[in-house]
Image (cartoon, rainbow, N blue to C red; front, top):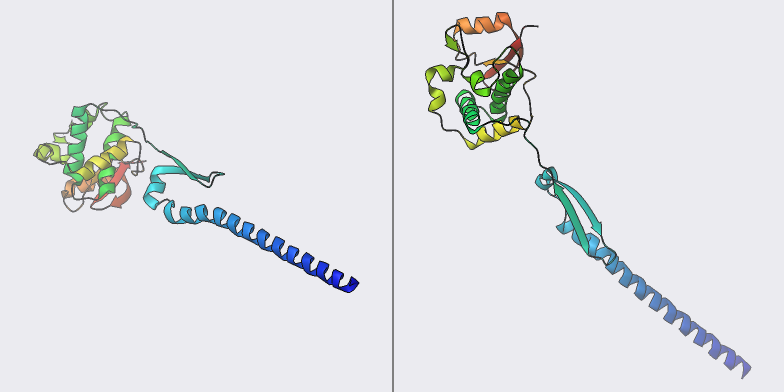
Length: 212
């Protein structure tokens, strides 16, 4: 009898232990499922694309309830230069006339040269005066002399390039002059080579500054 009682007690304790282990494992499995689901969904659904990463600062968190919380702030760039509509139109047109066949950076560089001259005390003080400046009987920008500046149709890419320049983006290394050796006459290019400092070439244009 005594041995049977001990055996029954041992079997009862074993069954109780097994039940406890099963309940503990079930709770752990449920908790793991709750913790894993939001993380897995975030990886699939909330990963920022490259374009979105460029335009936003992302802050991502998982709340205690398991609900995803995503917040971001769009970065806005302010214009460094402010011009009248007439000045902007002149800037758009000279960039289109001089660099219509160039890529967007090539257009940006022409806009940079105009703005560099605007800030240099050796050139006129307004964007229109810079663009339409005449020296020694010829215009500084050949499309002004030929009238092409008035005939061009300004492209969206040109507008985008000028906007980048107005926001302060500058690839010009301080250039005050540019020329296309392919189309410029020999006398003009000879003056560029002897009187100016060569900086770099982009597309069909060579960029220069005053001799140092």
